[in-house]
Length: 456
Image (cartoon, helix red, strand yellow):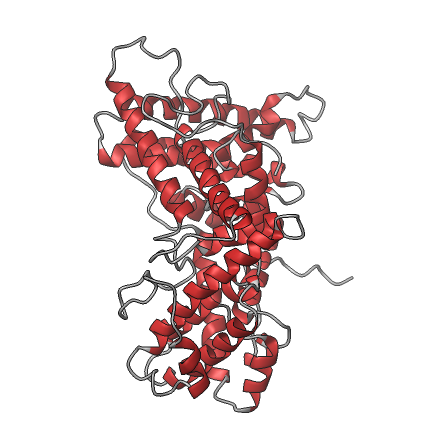
């Protein structure tokens, strides 16, 4: 009987033979390839990565994955058993970071892999489009989405200027034909957008954080919710509701120089309003975003070497009058890329401002005499380390509380791990079996959208 095929020592790359493979299905080829590669990473982690010592070391160096990739792993069947073991090591690493004053230095492994996969797909596509017969297939497949078109313009170089101009031509045609198509403006809809909507819907209807009033300060949301992450989620929810209501009631959307919503928040609104009575607001928001997208394409066309390569039709559409304030000189707009527009996204701006305000209130609370507040909210480790980096002295009490919380959870995780083994299978089980969810929220409160940890 032949022996079983050994499992790979690392997540293998998704095979990519050429541009023709990317253009075999309708939709943005880079979005689809990146999503497939991420699914392969999740599958490898479930089979072997969670028990691989090299993977554990890398996760400790970054203190886990980002919220998006953490949710992707936490939502898998059997995630509790795997993450119970993983978070034992992560929290032990966190205690070392908090004790010696250091911080995790590596980026999220999932984000790094996703960026590499996207660049690999984009390079393969640009190189393959040198073959003239692939251009028809590219147009039939629908071409790149706007974020990846901007990536192509940034990495195309001089030799790729004409190819980028042709790619922009296809984008202009798609925006002109149907400006309310989400796949054109935001790329393929991400499954995580539905999760984020669900998590924000669980948060009670707290008012936005104001001076002297921090949501969740009295502990009514539970001790596992980070008040800074909660304040950011509330502000984000209110900003999105305001934009959606404005488009649904009056048919108007914010005017001026704003680049519009970022890709993630636009996907959330489209996911939330799809096939609902307010779906018209999503179409109007997409039309608004398409106008901003035409401004992005205009800036691409104005780059040296691209303007002359643009087709006559493309120049006419791109040079058409745009909403007031959307036209800028080349190089003055927001950075292009996966999160193009995030710098001016009203929801992102509101979230960052609310988090800053919440952290300021936490600092002020530590300066008050003891007993002024009945309970002290527990920040997630990400915000504790940010606070310590800015003001080490005032963050001392928050660091001590974080170490205590981490050590308590480590004991629960070890107990849960023992009860999942054969020897402990008959022991009574309690709250320790869900300690891995609370550990994920302690590391980064954004994993559960600022609310209490629970099933995704």
